[in-house]
Each structure stands twice: as structure tokens, then as C-alpha cells.
Length: 164
Image: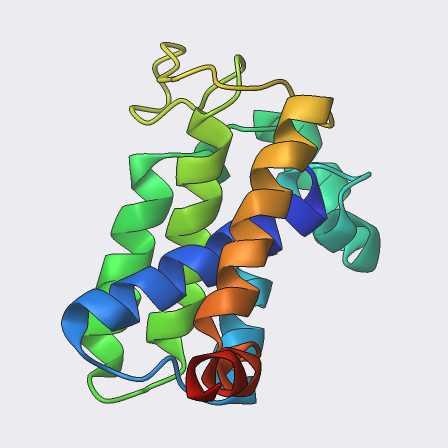
């Protein structure tokens, strides 16, 4: 998936989880952390949004494990779980971890999939669309529209229609 798709997908999953849990989505900081977390796994790709910002990490990581290696696996999820447990009440780790998890879920929707059981090369996938394809853009566009609708942007407009 493309960077903008990962951000939209991460925000959508964060919003859905908050709605299911009965919580608010949080403020701009939480949403920013979800967006950042949704881009973080691609630190292993020097041409990615994140990789271009930290090439001193991205290039060596890409050379050692390649793209969609350890950063797209259960090993990375275990590191996040350990960080959450060790941090205790640190609130910023939750949104970052949720964004990270959404990235992995999103990459599972492409034919390339992800190596959940890294270092095993077996990839898990549900190939709904190819990266940067029309199908990806349409799916993420619909999800983005759902986010806008859920945010209440159309609330007053709907209320005016109902009142008439």
C-alpha cells in the first residue's frame, strides 16, 4: 500500500476500534501518532515516506533484512507488546502501536503479503488489490469518505434536512 493509504487505513481502524470500545478517537496528538505508526513499518524501505527521513536506519535495514522483513512480522508486534507492557501508563504508545498494526493488516491485503512468522519466508495475504492500483485508491477513498462522515462533518447539514 502507498503511504497515504496506510494513513487512511490506520485512522479508519483507530476510529472503528474507539467506536466499538465506546471511547473517543482522541485529539490531534493521538491521530498524529496513529498516522506515524501506520508509516513506521516501512522504515525498511529507503524509498518509503519514513525511509527517506531516516536513511541512516533505512538503508542498512533494507540491506540486512529487505523490505517487508522483520518490521512486518510478529517479531515487531512482540517488540510493541513488550514496549506497551514496560511503559505501563505511557499513553502515546497505544496509538503508535495501533497504527503499526494497521500497516501490517493493510499490507496483508496486497498480493505481496507479509512474513508474519519471519524469518520464515511464508507470506500471509488476502490479495484484494495491488499497491498503487485503481482498486487501492478506490478502497481507500471510500474509507476516507466513511471517516469524514463518521467525524460529524455532515452532522449539521443532515440536521437541517431533518428539520424541514
